[in-house]
Image (cartoon, rainbow, N blue to C red; front, side, top):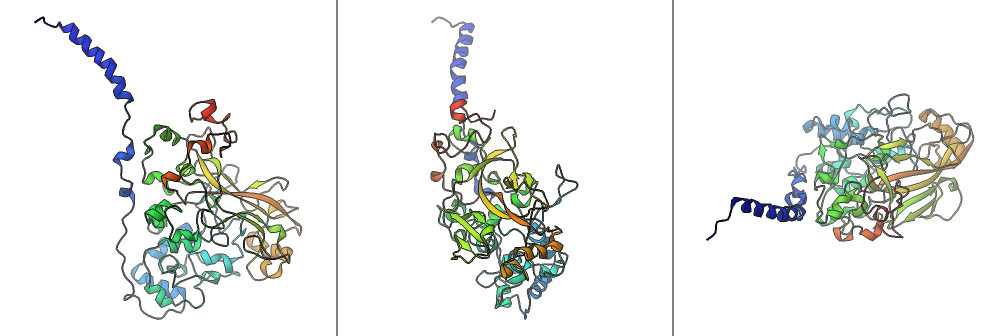
Length: 481
């Protein structure tokens, strides 16, 4: 038999390399999700200690309960007092264009729903994690006995808050204290599902239906029975997750992200994985909000005070005219997790234009920004026509608008509280607020498909996002400039 010379062996190996290497290189590679179990990142639920036979005594006030709690949980109140759930303010931030550090939160700023908590403690503080609010003196944020332990830990069938943040009339405080447990969806939802004055009013993706949801309302809370703290993980009572409207700059370490549990490239289709560089998970997996209950998309304060037929979804004399909608398709903006602008009390406005009160930061040139879904709320709210800034009236407080239906007295009462001078002349200006859509996550089968965005009648305005047009048409790839 003839020997094969060594150079033939080298040649044969070379041919094999030419043929095999491209096949291996382009062979579908396993994606990260195949080696990552998202359940391994969901926190374990601690065994609950039944307090029914631990708590005893007579409790006349909420603060009495807190003192009993502190006998065993000595550090708890101090921890709560350092969280935004209690301070209702962000950390101070240095923001371009401002003279000094600023803070944002319900304690000191306004929005375009109920406008302001300042001076309206009687009603607004029914959602504050504290007791003993008053209208005629500053609140003592340093008193641990003001911390409301029950609002987060008691059975919601046994406990509710009333005026000035105190327990509602008729609550059996001993029964409520004996019912305490780890917070569940009903505890968190007692405030967050009812923001803005009713079920699902403000956010659109937070509704009472999430207390016991089907899987097609929210796949995490429905199909997998998640509680809020499975994603909004908690350490020393500090809850992860920040709302864009109440924070100017958000540290990514303090924000909740889908990739806390899920791999970044978890789709079997690499075309979808390529989108993850520029498209937030929520954009495809939260295709609409207000799936169960309608959400408010418009509020016109200028019509308040009239004797018109009243209905929760169309008109209330104390608040004005509303528009509610179901199955609301979000607005899509670039978003890097912070704001490029937040209206601060006293900022000048142009009443002939739109005042965007919380503009999400990011653009097509920002490598940290992604296309993100937002619910847009449009309002007509009062402003001072001489000073050209938005006004924060007293509504629920003594002598407030909801009692007198007199805007002038409501603005005058607010002067010493907000620090804003009222000229005596007011009008109404259009404002916008953006609310990120992150709940009501749909099962994979209900996620957006290619044609939902990449078609003649697609839901995304590509030019508004900075593209020349649909990137599937002009570029062939979903990429930035």
